[in-house]
Each structure stands twice: as C-alpha cells, then as structure tokens.
Image 1 (cartoon, rainbow, N blue to C red):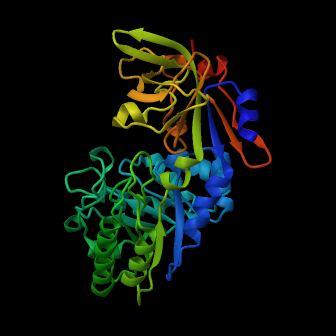
Image 2 (cartoon, helix red, strand yellow):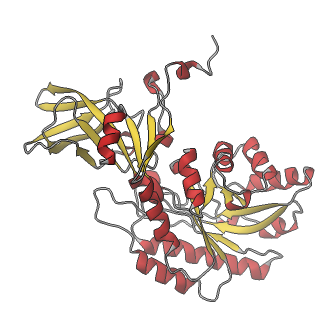
Image 3 (cartoon, rainbow, N blue to C red):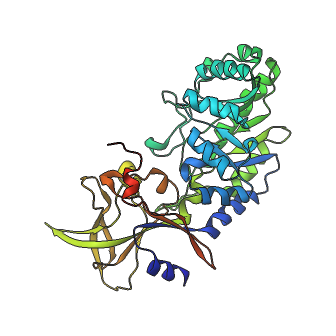
Length: 396
C-alpha cells in the first residue's frame, strides 16, 4: 500500500496529505445545488503550503487571506487577484498598500480607520479599490470560546452603528461592494450560520435603498465543522435548502470561506514513540513530535483523534507527550490505545488545518517534511528544515 511505502521511506515526524481527500471536499461543496451566484474562497490561514494552494486553485476555488504573506503565496500559487479577498482585524500599512496595488477582489475592512487610508492611498496610485466591511452581528456561533468571532465586545468586525455609509459613498478612491460576516469555526448548528446570513442580507438591502451604494456581494464567511470525536456535523442538505430560500429573488454574489473543512481531515501527522516512561501511576509515551508541530491540543485543550500503527490486541492507558521542555506539551492524557512499544508510529489525524501553518521552530527543532500523495504516487511538498536553516536569517 502507498501509506506503508511512505512510512518506510520518510522519517518522522512528517505531515502526510491525501490529495484525493482534498478534491473530494472541494467537489462536495462545488456540487451542492445552490441556486444563486457563489464562489468558494479557501481560508489560506488553514494551510498556506504552495502545493496545497495550487491544488485548491486548480479545483476552481478562490483565496481568502489575512496578511501580505498569504496574499503573496496565493498569487505565487496561481490565484488571480480577482479571486482573492483580504480579511483581518490587524492589517498593517504594508498589508493594505500591497493589497491595493495588486488590485484584488476586495479588502474587507474591520476598523473604520482602514477606510480613509485605503481611499487616500488608492487616489495617490490613480486607483479605485473595491472594499467590503465585515459586520459584527453579535451572534453566538455556539462553538468554543476561543474560536468564536461574531460576538459584540470582540476584536472582529465593526458594529453596524459605527459605520457611516453616507460618508463612504462620497469617497472617490474606494468602491464599497461587499458586506461580510464570520461568526466562528467548528460550527455544527447551521441555523446560527443562517442567522448571520439573514442579518447581512437585511443590512445590504437597506443600504442599497438608502444610499448611493451598490452592495452586490455578500461574504458569508466559513465555519463548517470538521468531525473529530463529536458525532455532530452540519446538515448540509438543510443548510443548502435554507440558503436557497433566503436568497430567492436576490441578485447578490455570495462568497463562502471554508478553510479547515477543506483540508483538516486530509492530513495526518506521523510520529514515532521514543520512550515509554512510567511516572507514578502513569504510562507516558514520549513521541518525536511536539506542540511545535501541532499546537492546537495544548492551545485549545482539545483531544485529537489518534491511531497507533500496530496490531496489538492488548490495550493500555497512556498519556501521549511531546519531547520539548514545556509542561503543557501533551497531545492527550489518559487515553486507551493498543499497547504501545518504542518505535511504534503514533498517528495524529485531522492535522491538515492549523498543523503545519501554526508550527514553529521552538527549542530550535527543524520544521518537518510535508508529503502529498494520491493513489499512484507521493511527492515532497515541503522539505524538512536543515540545522543550517535554523540560522539562515540570523546575524552574529
């Protein structure tokens, strides 16, 4: 089998991506019977690897970026500027200038001060820049506190009462064409998403009637949950039917921003057991990866799906720990797994989103290999850092 071949030929730790799984998720969304103009823009922050981005681009998606670096990588991966939108609550002047000069589809502002800056700089360049405004709808996405983004009092979006649409309509260097919303990640209740969509539609309809503005695009964000241990998932059939219903008779172009949904379950982080440590009543399997390679279990206190690549019929209770010098460097505690021995592969699943993209070189650990495979072949899409790579930008 291809997986067995890869495990023999690649040394751990490494990220292993299934190309067909990514294509299947994209195909699923593209083939939903949505009866309105729409575009799916991949949230690049989930995984900015050039090969992954190029694959997603070739499957017909656009890109959603939150930094000049993500914009640069998206352009390099093949996305057209007209298929890129730029979000984020902390855009720098460099971010904004770069996005303006690249003439992307839309810069979605999240601070009122951005509007005047974009207008003034665009005029100095003889440009008129398309912008959107991310609305904070004060809607609870009923997800984890650390990944909710639509509540009042947070840093994301702008409250509707802070937006002067009349003044915006008089700026000559910008064209307000988009309103956007995003209420969080890992959302399983599609009604929460629909509530944010309906709120945005209402605001757009009101402003198009009141002002010299033509809002023709609504960006509904992402947030579709990926299953880990939970059995809950979005009922896409009902979601699709309700989307069609609330947009019936409307002429908006709709953008969705799936990120994690597209890539999360396409990737496994392959690790190897270095030691089995008995400490008090605990059995701790220490592996050759750490939160430098996958920080989300420590950051969000989640339990990643795990499998052990052996055929043991016996089981045991283990803590799975990384090898860096941090007390929080555990992937999971008190989990029952097939009996583990030194040299076994421990495989962390659903790592395609925010695995590599949030990895670091903490403890001066080289960032791992990344491998993409399909039914017929595999290829390296990011080489493992060398020790020299750890020093290449430093000056002594």
